[in-house]
Amino acid sequence: MTKNVSSVSLRLFNRDSFPLITFALLFILCAVMMGADYRYQILKKIKSEFSIATSPIIYLINLPASIFLNTKNNFTTKALLKDKIKSLQQSNHILSIAVQENELLKSENKILRNKLRIKKNFDVVGITAEIILPNVRNGHSIITINKGLTNNIKIGSAVINNAGLVGQVINISKNYSEIMPITADQYAVPAIMNNSKENAILYGNGNGELEIPLFPASSSILINDTFVTSGAGGLYPKGINIGTVAEIKPTKSPKFNSILVTPFSQSTTYTQITVINLKE
Image (cartoon, rainbow, N blue to C red; front, side):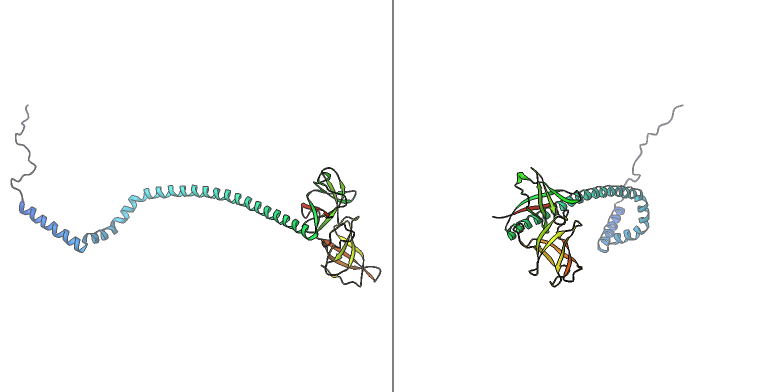
C-alpha cells in the first residue's frame, strides 16, 4: 500500500505579513525598561532580593568543591609547616653551634688578654701550655702539662693561670712536665696580705687548701682577706693571687692563730696555664 506524501512544504512562520506594530511596541517597552533600570538600578535590587533565596542552593552546589579544596589546602599547609619546622630546627642547631663557637672564641680571647696582662704586670716571660692529666702519685697531687725540655721548660719554674698561682714545675721530660700544685702537702710559697705588710709562708695541706700554722694573733686579719705572692726569694713575681682567708682558728698558744686559705686556682679550674720565668 502506497503512503501519500504531502506536497505542501512546512513554513516557519504562519503569518504572511511582518508584525511591525507589535515589534515596535516591544522595542519601545524594552527601551523604557532598560532606561528605568539604568536610572533606578531596579535589576540590582531584584538580584539582591532574589539572591536570598538562591544563596543556599548555590552554597549546596559549591559545597563539595569547597570541601575538596579546603581539605587539599589543609594537607598542603600541614606538609609545608612540617618542612618549615624541620628547616627551623636545622637552623636552630646551626645557630647553637655558632653560639658555642663564639663563646669559645670569647673565652680564648679573654685567656689571651689575661696572659698579656700577666706578662705586663709581673714582668715575666711566659710559656703557654695545657693541663693534660691531673693525677695523684704516692698520695701526692701531680699536674701533667704538654710542654717540656723542647719548649725550654725549667725545673722550679712557677706556674700560673688566669685565676692565680697554680704550682711549681718539679719534673721534666722531652715533651711533658709535671707540676706540684700549691695545695700539695710539700708545697710552700712566700706570701703577703694584699691590704697590709704582713708576710707569711703558706703551706699546702694536701686537702685542696693552704694553711698558715702560726700567724701572729696581734696581726689584723679577717675572713676573705687576700694573700698574694710576696716576691721573696725571686722565684715568684710579686702580686700573683694565691687565695682568700676561709677560716681563722686559735692554737694552743694565745699568741698565734691558724689560718686556712682557699686558693683562687684549682688544678682543674682552667686547662690553659703559663709557665713563667722572671726576666733577667
